[in-house]
Amino acid sequence: MAEVNTVAVLGGGSFGTAIANIIAGNGNNTYLWMRDAERARRCQQERENPEYLPGYKLDPNLTVTSDLLHCVEQCDVVTISVPSKSFREVARLVAPHIKPRTMVLSTTKGIEGDSFLLMSQILEQELTDVRIGVLSGPNFAKEIIQGQYTGSVIASDDDDVIRCVQQTFSSKTFRIYSNYDRYGVELGGALKNIYAIVTGLAAAIGCGSNTMAMLLTRSLAEMSRLAIELGANAMTFLGLAGVGDLILTCTSDLSRNYRVGYSLGQGKKLEAILAEIGQVAEGVNTLKIVKEKADKLGVYMPLVTGLYDVLFNDRDIAKVIDGMMTGEMSSDVDMQGGVKWTNN
Image (cartoon, rainbow, N blue to C red; front, side, top):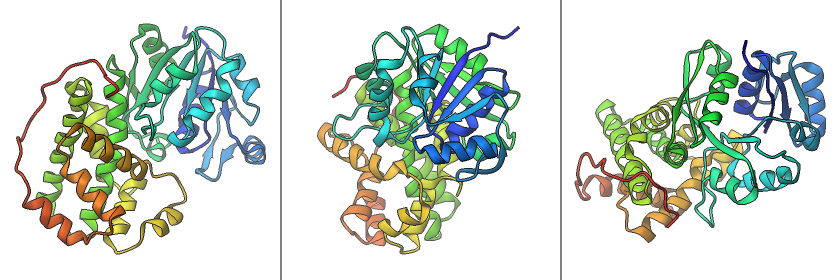
């Protein structure tokens, strides 16, 4: 008989809601925390999250609440599923209330700006005596709730965390694979958002299949190049959290970042695009952070540089693309690298 856990998912967006419902459906006592008390009350009463997943019925084992203390202090597993800009704040809010040895997971795909810290590193700073993991992969919430077969990755250096998450979070259609390279998995999830903007833009201006294939593979090369410089395991980028997530995000208009790029290619301004989407597109902030880090480290990332010029230097898209096509033709494959993250 499967072990029953008490789990809190902090963040009532589409992915947080979808994953919380799977956990509840597995018979676990599950809380979904939302900051907005009225929204939480409405979701609990109506048994759906109409803002993010309309028409998707919530499991009876799932309690939606705005009472952070109540849903965290009794939990075996706490999952933080909020945008990266709010991640440290939420970690600080829960820090005094988490019991020792609680498993704390991040599903957030982003990098903190000033520090270049990944979300699990923020957990290391803000929490004490907890066991940390990262859940990431090619996971659109709308397809998860439709029962589409989906693969994800739990990354941790703690075997108990891996075992618990695979048991508690998986379903017949949601499979979870293991990886010990926590930082590589996180980097893959954060970096691919940049390239989704690039491929969305390319699609909007009519680039063909040859170009899209080149962009995808050169994007993987850039991601791997930076990850290797930072000490992550290059092989991680050949798995679900690397190339898998890259392919998904760069080829579907379900991706907010892809939609940002597509709208840019149609001539719309960034501010108007973000207002129209109405949800966080992590790739825009990640682009700024990664461009600064790549320049500092001297890592060759022409797609990052080109997109940055389009978004923030008001460069003409056609001229930027022409510049990238006449730039250095570097090595096709460079997958050498270590396995230990260093925060340069």
